[in-house]
Image 1 (cartoon, rainbow, N blue to C red):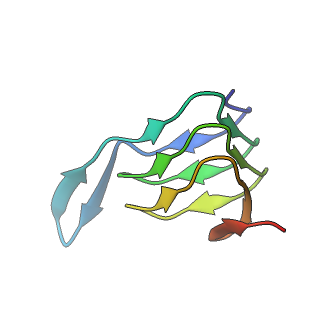
Image 2 (tube, rainbow, N blue to C red; image 1 turned 135 degrees about the vertical axis):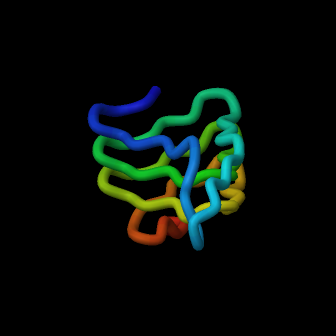
Length: 76
């Protein structure tokens, strides 16, 4: 499930060069409203990303964990 106003990046521009990378979600992933997911991110199955969170480019989030914040980190 992807909440309202989520931004999933398909590309970025760095030093005048356009860079692209896939964003991959496992099964049963929830992305909270207003979150930003950068290029090259992989989120494991059964994970949740809290509202208004930021997941930096090329980050791998393990499955079965709840993440939140900017940058997104695991919650206890």
